[in-house]
Length: 107
Image (cartoon, rainbow, N blue to C red; front, side, top):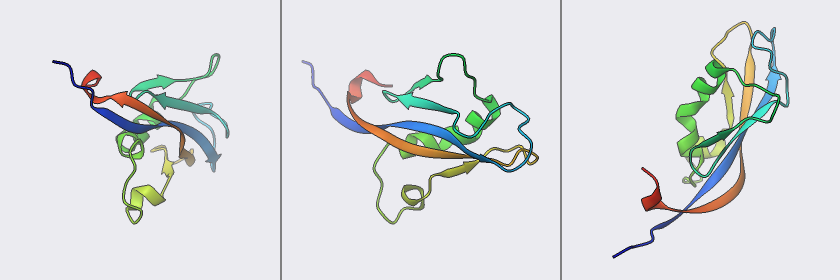
């Protein structure tokens, strides 16, 4: 027997908000990537995104995909810093749309 366990999560966009130092990785304010359908990472054609910046934000993305209690710090905060101290790159996590998925289709 097949059961459908619907879950609702957010697709996310991570955008370079500002760069307070020198852009070592070649990113610019406004550059972004998106996470859709739970785990699909999309970077616009012809663009790139620094893997170290992505690595610094990855642990927060599963939590930001879900609605949390209003007083949870992660529900209120959306800015993340890249670990390169000379770059001073700040990224913003935004929820861009809601998607419904079958939880049994995910691992």
